[in-house]
Length: 248
Image (spheres, one colour):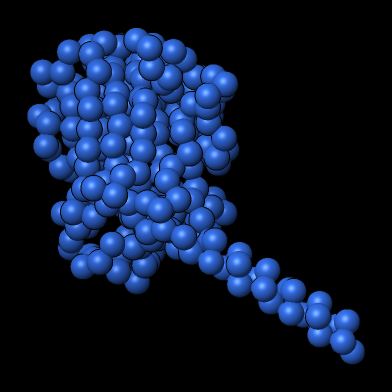
C-alpha cells in the first residue's frame, strides 16, 4: 500500500539520521559545559556512584570563583563522579583542555596503595576498548565485575590526576585495577588555591598508557570529572573549569 511504503520511507530516513548523529565524533560535537550560563550544573552530565555504594557521594556544585564558572568538588570520606556519556562511537578528541585548582589537598592520598587511592581532582576518559585485547586474567575479572554490577564497566580508562606525593609526569596503574591507568599532572610543588591550565593529546596519552594492548585509539564511552576520599576517610576540595574538547 502507498501509505505503508511512505511510512517505511520516513522510518528509514529517521533511522539513517539518528545513525549519523550517534556516530558524530566527540571533537566535532564538543563537550557540554560543566556549568551552564544560568549557574546550574551542566546538562548532559550526571553524578554517578558505585552500585550499592556505602560511602556518601562526593558533592558537585556549580560556583563562581575568581570570575570563573567552575565545578566545585568536595569529598568528605566520599566517592562519586561527574560523568558525560557521548553518543556511541564518538572518537577521542585530539586534545582535552581545562583549568583546575586544589584548595584543600588530601594529605593522606597515595595513588600507589589501595588505602590511599583517593584524589582531590581527576579528569578521565573511558574508552570502548575491546575486551579481547585485555590480558586473560584481567579479562575474566572484568567479565565477573560486569556480571555482578550489571554495568558495562569500561575495559580502559585514562585518568589525569592530582596527587601531592608524586612527581608530575608519573604514570602508574590504579591500585585496584589495571583497567584504569593514571597520569599525574599536578601535585608536588603545586600551590593550593592556584589555577593551573592543562592541554593533553588524548590519543598519544592513551597509546602511552595502553600501548601494551592497543595500537589504535578506541571510541570514547565517557568523560569523567571527579574527586574522592572514601579510602582515606579524609576531606578535599577542588575546582575544575573550562573543560573542552579541542581540535589541536
